Amino acid sequence: MTDLGWVPDGIDTNVPNVARTYDYLLGGAHNLAVDRELGDRVLDALPGARRMARINRSFLRRAVTHLVASGVDQFLDLGSGIPTAGNVHEVATRARVAYVDSEPVAVAHARLLLADVDRATAVQADLRDPDDVLSRPEVADLLDFDRPIGLLLLLALHFVPDSDDPWGVVARYRDRLAPGSHLVVTHATADRRTRAMRDVADSTARTRERLHYRTRAEVTRLFAGFDLLEPGVTGFALWRPEGAGDISADADDNAVAYAGVGVKPTAHPTPDHRARGTLT
Image (cartoon, rainbow, N blue to C red; front, side, top):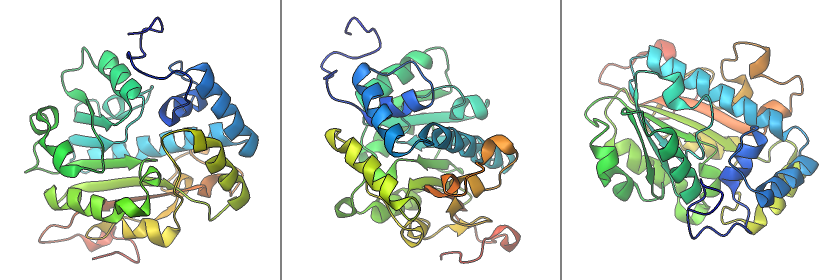
């Protein structure tokens, strides 16, 4: 470890990182000066970025709470980032959770936070390689893939370029999930605030993680083989908001990322819970 304690040896502290920058936007303490500089450039381009980070965290709470109420008690969180307050194992207090991220700092800090939590683990792996992720002992020993799992991909797939086929990646995870499993996605878009979102992408060009925005139709394709729940793929603040803290007064803030929740159908699907435009 370096003198920063939570930063593993070998990390270039002169290069900003998206996970640490997101932690900064959420008001966390696990970020470096270079990450704060990047965060400030993002805020220059998109002044509401802190509010949007909180909206995404509010969506996580609502979606995970819904899955728990539906009987899901195990989660695979891909591209989990640094697990600041309000993360999955804190919302689903009795569930088993496997956090997966390719960023060493995110995983190192997650392991520190989870040291006394026997129902959660953190794994350093690339979500683009489902075979590797699902074969890791930490994942395979914790989660039972013969039972429903909540597969979470929150603000993760927009770092996967088209050339790596994010739709095919999700399909490979889907094929390993039991019926009744859920897919939860948030994905940044430039459909609204197009100029500002392009400026944000330019600001992150120094990092390993390049942004690849997608349209509503492209995000909806990720749910192929799942039954979309109401209200379908929509702005992330508009997915079943419960109060003022879940949604912004600025309509464009609510739509800088799309969100959706789908369920892998069983032999007897429940059409009352399907959204219009369900993919099969």
